[in-house]
Image: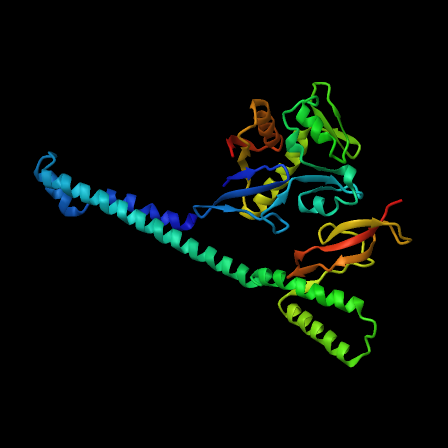
Length: 171
Length: 184
């Protein structure tokens, strides 16, 4: 039977929960932690790492360790908030043809949606392992100050990984 | 849960099998419903509902019992995790003190180190083991890099362990904080 999970997609940390035996319960990641760092990295060995594993190698690989992408979701490159953030980041970014933000990971350029979807994919895989069933739908949280384009972008990030996003809630 | 719930569907069938006397009563009235018959039907409906509810509750209880047993087994296996995690800083201080020792042949020092080994044996008996670090290749599953240094060894090899890591029953308890060799 397919399952539904709730994901708190945070800027630096994410969490997941599901209804287990009729009770809502936070689920552990494969690494055994409830808190999953919202970090994606391309290791020097070429392997893609997400979560705790990405965080553990961040010091040695700052250019290919992507974090805090939620700040760019659904925002334009010229946005003053984005420009302020970009000054603090060790990884490369550029303006996309449509005015959005693009992030360099390895040799490729990715949108914040794609990076977020990598985090969501890991969360989904961990939840499936934990719950012992396929997860095909999720509820993803959105901050109350997210505008429509940011909400849509978050939803798209979930849908990229063949997950039906039921709705986004304010938190 | 599936196999138990199949039992729960039994009451629906039971309601179809009317008692013999009931059929006779209905026949004598020529099919017209009597007030006592509707009362009986209501009671039977309630009976079926209660029976199905009881069977579901029983199935849920059996499933709960099974899951609780699994949870208990998990707690027994990894229950010490919290306690050991709080205990590790004490062991870290032993490690730091050992590194600073100049004369390890002193009898008092030997006794001090024996206490450390005793703690390690105790932890080993509870499934806690240290993670190998120095000389190994960096593995984010077990190690956390705190610094990159230039060394003659192979790239990504661990050259120094800043804080020892531990695993419990082959599951990570605390990643070891290490310094690794730079990739040129």
